[in-house]
Image 1 (cartoon, rainbow, N blue to C red):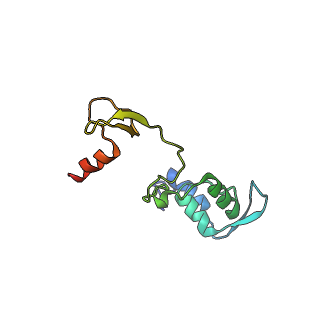
Image 2 (image 1 turned 135 degrees about the vertical axis):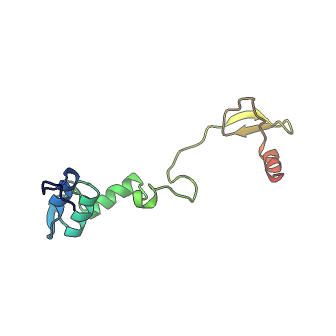
Image 3 (image 1 turned 180 degrees about the vertical axis):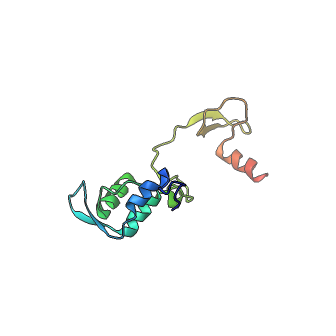
Length: 132
């Protein structure tokens, strides 16, 4: 914490200073009305990141997060999954018919062919891909 030349807190530090409490607070959950502890360390964590106080108890927060399908926050890269699939259900993908540029058979592709580039059926695509 740095004081300005006048001896007062800088504007961006005032809010953080207000939350620097050495005691726990008791808050009431907006969903279940259960009281829960907002510890001094949690208060500091929230203040450092300029978060507002939690309005839900930990169990209601977890339930809400699970119902939304969240897999994490900023600490996990925004919930991005490197396991494929993107971490959400997108439904069936629209497929388009095209004629394979290599063998002439009909092919189903997940994009609208523009005619500017060749389109291959699955078998010819695998052959083309393995050639590189």
